[in-house]
Length: 265
Image 1: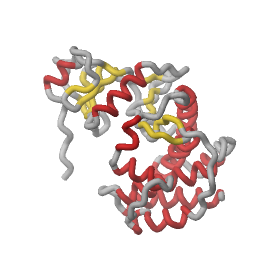
Image 2: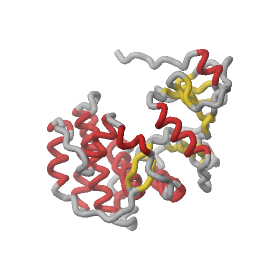
Image 3: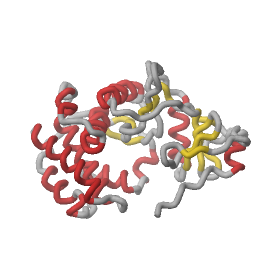
Image 4: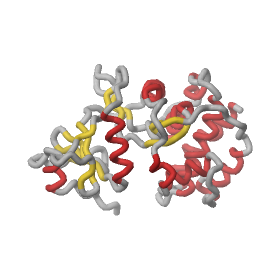
């Protein structure tokens, strides 16, 4: 039985101006709505502070961004928690629109310098990212993605795309609310090409979002799209093979997406 996430404690809510708000878990967590604030765990303060400062100054046409909230004493992180203004909406199966959001967002982040904290990250996703790009060698569970990773790796060719700050996990983190512009939440920074970030959305959508392989074809006008898809698929295969909660059931969709990518090559 999975344990329910713990809500932000009273002193954290008070620090972000939500003292009297009753915490409401958002879509299973780990973020909580507390009145007009969304408060989420931030175990890496340097990263959370960088993201807050970056998003505070980011302006993207026809896109809502969760503006960071400072605590009463000016901090972005209090007791391992950070906060943004609550954004209404929900994730929907509008996969082409999410890829379009990725393009607009990454035009705005194209000139940001590389954050120093990225090289120090050691979580599953960071290790899988470096594995996919040949920057780190770690063993992968064969039946949960490692075997397919080794096969697909043979399809890699040199890629000539410029790395930049991107949101590497947009699938499920773009919200739609009526006629309002789409909203981007839970910014997860990577230093990779913008085309790769769009390809990750496409792979996720085909693997787990009900999209068909036509999504891959509709965005083939992007630069070096096939190789971006290869690297995005390698990334997700590595994540799946390394993640302790992965199962053969969750692998089925990713395996299907990988075969569709292979058919494009």
